[in-house]
Length: 288
Image (cartoon, rainbow, N blue to C red):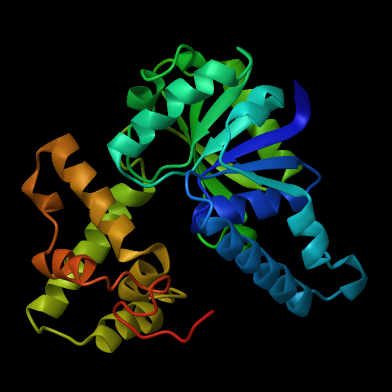
C-alpha cells in the first residue's frame, strides 16, 4: 500500500476536479468510472482547468503542464489498481443504488487500512459505512465545485468514524493545501440542509412568477454580497444533483419543507441540467 496512491471513484465533474487537485499536489491517482466514454471528456476538462489556472496565476513559472497532469492519472474501469491505495474518494451519482454498488467492490480489493471518503452532499455517512466491513474507516468529505478553486471542505464524522480516520483525512487535505470544517452526521449535513432549501424555494418563486431568474439572483448578489445567486448556483451544481439531494432530504426527514418544486422536476426531465448540459436557468456556450 502506497501513501501516495489515492483512488477516485466516478469521473464526473466532481471526481475529475478532485483527481486533478490531488495530482497537482503530488499524489498518484487511479480514476475509475464504469463508462469508458466519459474519460475523454474528463481529460479535456482537466486540460481546460489547468490552462485556466495558469492564465490566472501570478507566477507563471509555477503553472502546471496540462498534458503532464493528464498523464499522471490512471483512467480505468477496473477496481484492481486500488489494491495499492491508502485512501479512496467516492464521487458517484447521488443515487443510493449507485452508492450501494461501489463499496462491496472496494472491500474486495482495498487493504483493511484503506480509508473511504464519501464525497456526497446528502447521504448519511453512517448509512454508507454500513455498506462496508470497516465503518470506522469511513468519513464524509464534501468537496465544493469547482474543486480547484474552493479552499475548504465540509468533513463529516459518521457514528463509527474513528479519530485515526479523521486524522488521516485531515492529513490528506493538508497535503492538498485545503482546510476543513468537521461536523457530525446528518443527511445533508450543514451545507445542503440550508442550500437545498434555498435553491428549491428560489425555484418556487420562479414557478409562481414572483420574480425572474435574473431578479432572484440579482437580489442575492447585490443585497447579500453573494458571488452567485441561488439559481446560478443550481446551474453550477447541476439540477439533477439538486433534485436527487432534496429527494434524499425529503425521504430522510419526512418533512414537507423538502418537497421538490415541480418546476425542478420538469427541467430535469427535459434535460435542462445547468452548465453541464448547456442549459438550465441560463444558457451556456460549450466549455463555459
